[in-house]
Structure formats: C-alpha cells, structure tokens
Length: 201
Image (cartoon, rainbow, N blue to C red):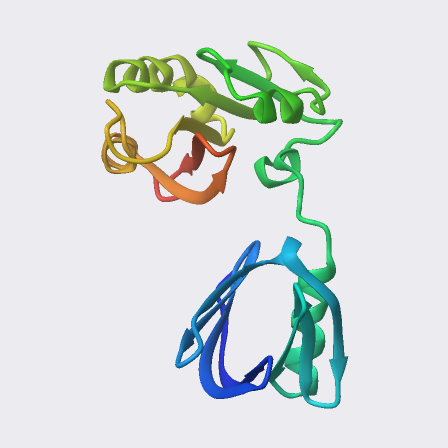
C-alpha cells in the first residue's frame, strides 16, 4: 500500500515526531516512538480536526496527519481486508486452471469462488510449486494459455530453507518472456507471485 507521512504522534501522553507507514494490514511507526499495530488491534478509529485518533488496548493515540490524510487513513483502517479470492482476481465468472497440489485451506476457499475449475479455456492459472522442477513443469503446462493472455499465479512456501524461492521464480519466468505484476500473501505458510506475458513479446 505504501502510504507514509512524517507527523507528530501522541501515544498515551508521549509526544514525538514519527514516520508513519500505512501498510496493507498494519500501521508502522518509526522514530522516537516505534510501534507495529495491526489494524485488528485498533479501536475507536476516528478523525478529529487534523488528527487520526484510535486506541490500542487502554492507550489513546493521535497522529497529526492533516484532515484529508487522516480521513483517508481512517477509511482504510476501518475497511474489511480484501478476500484472498479478490486479491487473486477470482470471481464467480472466472474460469481457473490449477496446476500442482493445492495445500492451503485459504487457497481452497478462494478457488471455491470461481465459476469453474477447468483445464481448458481458463481466464486465470494457479500453480502450486515446491521445487525448480515443479516450477518448470508448471510453466510448460501453462505456456499455451499464457500466450493467449491468461495470467498465472505461482504459489510457493514463504521464508528461507525451501527448495524454491522468489528469485528462482522471477529468473525463470523473466527469461521466458513473462513479467511479474503482483504479489499476494496466501496464508501464514504460502505466498504468491503473478506473471503476465510481457507486452512486447
């Protein structure tokens, strides 16, 4: 999301200048006051004059952002997070092709919102990969649909110590005329990268 502002923060009576970053699901404060606050822990979110006001536990917090920015941030914080299906671009009219074993329950729930899971005529491809070999095999299987413009999501395990990582996925796909266009968190264990055929190809 990338929204950020340098502002005055009053955290339960402690006042300091901070750099505030509004991310997808949390507010990060850096400077003399350092906090990471998930939206789920913020209560009584409101705008008062130029301030974004909320409470965390029993502590009252005010960020002097200016009326316009405070209103935008309050709306974002108060809005429900998008579903995984929405992040992946899956709707009740989407034809999805899956490649590999779908392990994450969150992903299974998202796929259930698709119009149909089909091998042919897919609008979107979801490939679950856990090794360089599986990545290459999935790309080969999806090549025909990718040439017709369908995007592909590669779902893989987060963090170090796995046989496949983000760098390896980007390297193979970019070398084959694809461009990464989006990142999405799938679950605590899995993440995803989306690729589309590079327009110049």
